[in-house]
Image (cartoon, rainbow, N blue to C red; front, side, top):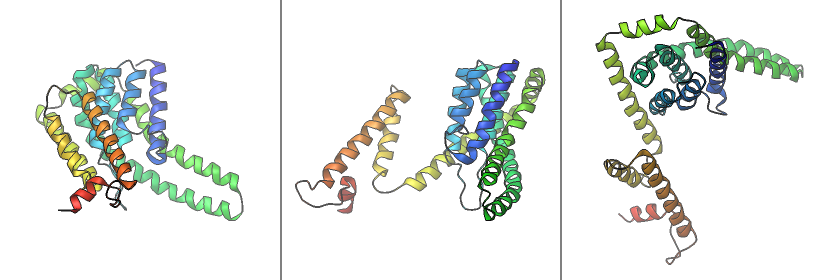
Length: 266
């Protein structure tokens, strides 16, 4: 990577770290971070493929109570940098995915450290608020958010200055049992991520669409775009039926949820 690419990668990493807390523009999501890093380094196709694959894993990563989820931001940025410096292009995506999970766990420790340091900032903000120093409160808030950005930007900068030959040699030195095992583990994480999302969304109204999706996905001639079109179309059909049901309809009753009314009869 040249100097401009390194600067742009560090900027992307900084915003990805902040977005892990802000959730405003989703820079921390793998599909966004990996694609942007691939774009600024001239590896757009590999970045998109890596980001899309990691996004499937990250779908089930969520902070639940006091449990902090693995860090998608560091996993996305670091694995994308490893992919770029490995010099293998799309062929290097499986290896980058294999190291993404350990990186996500490492990012978990980093975010815990930063959040611990932020406790002192919160107390300082409380003191400033008591004295009506609202400008100081804003500055402390900005400083705490920037600290989250540095949590990703500093490791990213360090990785950018590691010689590409060293990264390539380290990746080639990884034994097959390790890379294959991590790839299999990553595939299992995808399944667990989907299961967690389904568990949060599952109800008797959406189960039929899930089963229809599994059946339609078995048709090999359909591309992902075609499956997406079918999904959007079914969503519009459902919303239209729900609107008609809510307007009274012929029976003059019902809950406004056509599938729910049908299933309630059984």
